[in-house]
Length: 177
Image (cartoon, rainbow, N blue to C red; front, side, top):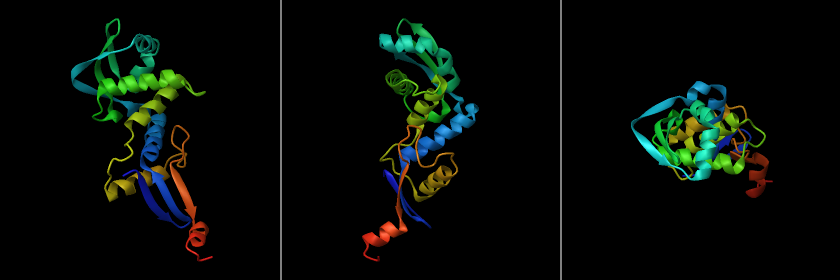
């Protein structure tokens, strides 16, 4: 439920499904900003923020809008969320927004522009989670899409998406060499 095992001509690959999907989503959002289109909510959601979160949102309102959030000030520490980035699927809008804001406040942009860091955070929140069961077909599609990314060996955070065990390593482990 967390790792995909794949065999290739060079050996075995253990693939972290969350990190792999994060790389796929990050590349898609980085290449095509329109991919972060909004999904209107049936009913607006009121999000209560801590003072630091509210100040941060006020400072970065345009960047959050470009990600696909449709938000309005609804009080000194409240927002009205009318739409969320479509890549978030059915995630709770208030939790997703707070997590993205908290992550960006805590980590900063790592030498990226704020917009790039926001896309990175959104990709992490939108990616499938470790432990989420995937069908065999979904696993195959995830690996196929990962292979097509610019940097298939690392996620947007820089963590490995996969561990490679070469044929020679496997042969040594099984006493064939």
